Amino acid sequence: MQYKAIFSDIDGTLLNSRHQISSKTESAIKLAVSKGIPFIPVSARPPYAITPYTEQLQTNQGIICYSGALILDKNLRELYSVQIDQADLAVLNQILADYPHLSINHYAALDWFSNDLDNYWTKQEADITGLFPKQTPSNLTKVHKILVMGEADKIKPLEQKLKQKLPHLSIHLSKPEYIEIMNKAATKAKAIGFMERHLHVSADEVIAFGDNFNDLDMLEYAGLSVAMGNAPDEIKQVAKKVTASNDEDGIALVLNEIFNL
Image 1 (cartoon, one colour):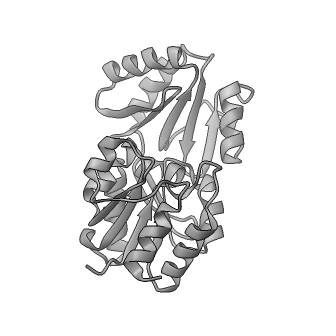
Image 2: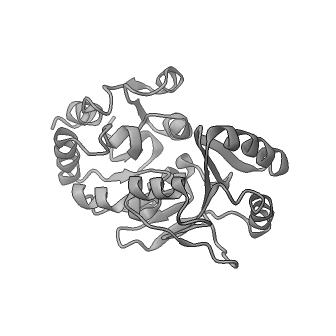
């Protein structure tokens, strides 16, 4: 099979445990791009937490943000968008108003809004991403994702409550301290499907790299699915190929093999 596009998760996959792209991985991706193979990140991150890496890699391609809820072109113009329905957003905001001690974050296109800019978890997320939120306005619309952060013993019961009240939404823990809430129609696989049409490639011609459960649908969908060595066993069992870990240049090893770099 001649593969014509590469899609990759960022955290735990493209980035090593020091939150960096290793020199070997950077070189392999740049060589693939130079051969005309698009490299597109697929991440739960907001746009401005992805662009530093696309600039480093000189990908000159679009980005898939919020786990598939938003796709932007290389100039950060919207190509595709799946938002939380306004009626659902109203219910969510009503429920979450009872939890002001938690860090409640709304992501809308390029913007990050938070209920408490001084909350420990908000500040920690700002340190991780290098971004800084604005205070959440009262009339916010067109939200792609809500992220609620706090101590795990406060987060778990809230997750269960939200799932009971809004079972038709995508509500899951990305960490024991993080609840991510999105429209169920927003998935990494659907976003890749859209980009295939944009790039004029088919699913069989796609390579996808991932390391965790939020990559599962993408790995099940891609022609060549590659699980990182640091992935859980359940993810490795789904993938067609398992490579070395994100600290051992796992992406570079596969790209060098597939494209004879």
